[in-house]
Length: 131
Image 1: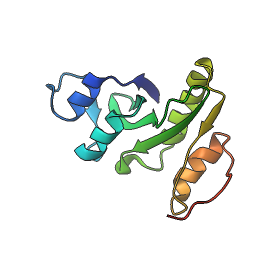
Image 2: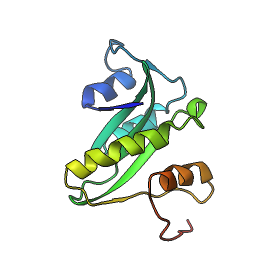
Image 3: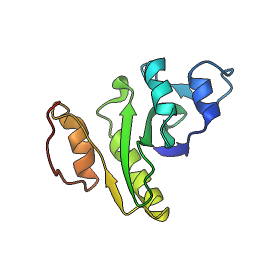
């Protein structure tokens, strides 16, 4: 697993607005275009790359200096392979080097897999929210 900082051209490529010139294949069920368009607007994103395949995206939902909220998504066909856990593990030192001292994340109570991703990376449950 490696992380590549995503730029606007990466998103334009994913949305079909640039020719397919990237040296990567994309997991076929990565995300619908409307989700990619939303993720594109986050303050910072990294592409989750395994071999020569883009399998997910991890990013910051806010950029509040020393405390940030992280979100991630992996193509459903690639679930259960540890990619989200590895991406988060790779991102945490990058954030620390940038002076981030607190990282938060939210996940659905109906998503135990995502809860395990957070637990494996040292996150502690601090509450539960009902939507």
